[in-house]
Length: 492
Length: 105
Image (cartoon, rainbow over all chains, first blue to last red):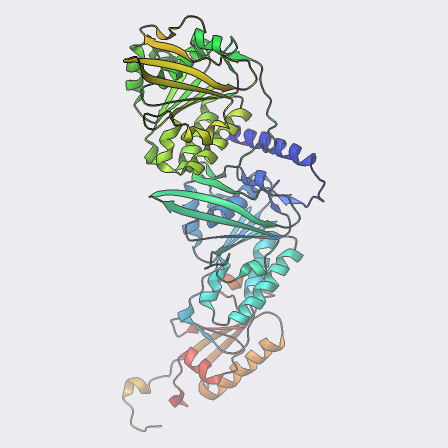
């Protein structure tokens, strides 16, 4: 968790920096949510002393986001909170969020949180004549006084519409309630169900207009993806894209493209590719540390061999390598690489090389992205290999995969990790269509081929681009030998 | 009134314990109290008790009876608990809400 926080701080500093250099906007006070990523895209959190509307369909994560806001407020930012829940009772909510490590009963006991479950049973209630919702105000005020709360969550207040018959009274009272929260200077989160063609079923966006966040949970071809978008944020800069977000054992996290200003530092240090002749082709010294390398080619051209060389070279330097494997098991890869004279097993045994083998279809893109973040965060490698990125296309569209890669690369660059991505070119043709989408994200692009020339199969390698160095423009033939990948056409 | 009732129904009529939740002495709350008093005198003569609770004085009590709307009348006895919200201006609906049969008057 601490490394995650550290990252958030770094990213936040990057964002602040890029904004400070922009046009000056009168800053409004913000209350951090403590949710990784959300505070970055909102430039600091939710508007202090104002209500924020969080809308989304059933199961989109509204309650979780709202609860995180309160729990983090109480634990990290010294602000007590009130959770007024209209749908689930205290025990249900507590058990829902316990899996994320939130201890609601503990916070209640410490007086940092007040949970009030408002139950309303239409069948038990007869309505006759005028009324107002003063009872609700009284309960809120009591809870706020009892804890000295600065944060309030109303989840999901729209339930009142199914419990009480007079919609006109309800609307007038909700308007009064939101005004009241604002007058009291409370930072409030109001959750609401998404309506048909509207943000919320009851049109609450009319009353809560300072900030609106939309959550979305889609299932496309049996793969679920969660997204978050800041629809509106009065008086503040905010990221306007849809950002993937995750709910996992670390809680909720939003994954923004963080280095909007591309402010990460470029290293001048070079890393050997593990193949001497290839280093020659790359300006004589290999890849830049912290850069991204794309190696593309059709099946069997030697992409994984090149990855193994790179991993081996890094481990020889005593560096840590994280290897994401989507096509085969680590055992199989280690066996195959022994046939060309690369033994990775000792590096695995020494704890320098760590394989993460996963079937791409096992999870959605966000989950893969999350798992990559977490492994990079926990393992702290200096080199990360993804073999092959094209496997991820089976769980997302090309645009989605590109967006995801952008986030991975972004994260690697900010962490100064060198990224090595292999990409399978489909078919026999050297179609560069798949790579076209992702190559622009890469600093170095190497293409490997295995073609029939004069009735002989010949392997060749060339460098399409390599930013920041003078590199070979020739096509070089090579062979996979007992001693690894060797260029066969003389010098590099 | 029928002169020959079976013994069990002739027994002591059930009494009502009613709790009226208000928030301060607003005209609406005063009106609800006046309406309730009148209805009880007319239909529940000598078998009712009214407790009035001002939430501004006892805010913690709102949770126990799940009070949101004000005024709210809660029938605590006989069980099950029933609630009537509003200023109790419609006598028929109040009686229906309390489950009091009008023929009893």
